[in-house]
Amino acid sequence: MNIKDTLKASVAGAALFAVAMPAATIATPASADPVKSGNKNSLTMSGQVNRGVLYMNDGKEDAIAHVDNDSSSTRVRWIAKGKLNEAVTFGTNIEMQAESNSTAQVSITNHDNLNSGTNGFNQRKMELYIDHKQFGRLWVGQGDPASNGTSEVDLSGSTLVGYSGNTDTGGGAVAFRNATTGLATGKTGGGVNTNFDGISRNDRLRYDTPSFAGFKISASHTSRNMHDIAGRYSGKFGGVKVGGAVAWASYAGGNATIDSQFNISGSAKHDSGLGVAVSYGSRDMKAAGRTDPDGIYLKLFYDAKLFSVGTTAFGIDWSDRNDVAANGDDANIWGIYVQQDLKSIGSQMYLGFRLYSLDNATTNYDDIAIVLAGARVKF
Image 1 (tube, rainbow, N blue to C red):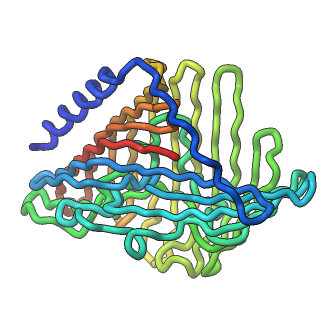
Image 2: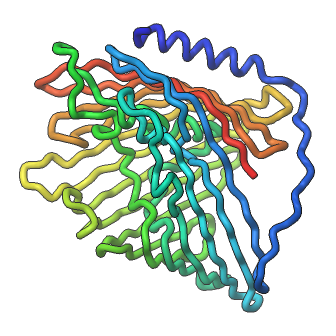
């Protein structure tokens, strides 16, 4: 199947998916017995399984993989919380990931038995916090530094299958082929693209101010002397909900090639369901003669109430990232998505198509196409 045929099949599949959803509300299963703490603090356990089928086509070859969706991977968490007094709360979070055949790792040549961590089970978060109503929250341990997620503000209902971290949901490990020779190159979809998001989960000390009129400031210091600062906002003006984030991060000893990074993102959604999400990022590189990469992302979306089971979210997005892997690289991605919420069971189904392209002055590359269909069930 060529890329044009793949596009036609994806669009047709998305339409069929939306039309075929039943109108009846799905019954909610009986609640399980609550988890009880061995101490005086409250304890809740939750998690999810997020699995799908991924089709990949590099212009010459294709493959189908059975995957875990890396945009929101299969995981389990235990959250404890207790009040010291009316002003001070202590809490902990342990979150473990079990991700087999991650969409961020599979490729046409390698898409079986890929597990993140030892035997596919690894730690995401191991943290505690102290929260004061007036003075904010202090985090200690492995978790999100201040800038993590600041490129990903998106108020749409289609983020499981399409958001600014678009290489996470398939195609990131697929190699571009030289259009002239037909040979696979060393450049991959993820290697030439990034959403310029902040420092990822790490051992850190983080402080968040209390929210004031929708604004919040965060700062953190992370292992290997990385540090960052971020600001976030959420609010509503009339019938428009808005959100935004901005961050700066110094990678210092934490990265051999990146010195620092700036990124910003925002999203607006009207009560009608129409909305937009945008982001921009840039990096200062350490090597002399290395062009500083930058990139933009744009998404238009519509969250519609078509079925009683939950919101049906449609999205189309585009990104342009420059000089990420090497000077002169111009990488573009565009995609189209549909995601169906199953509100009564807190779960979702989704379908998406994405097309990767790469250009530079010396080489012509074949496009990469992917189609991802799957579901996330929470508990």
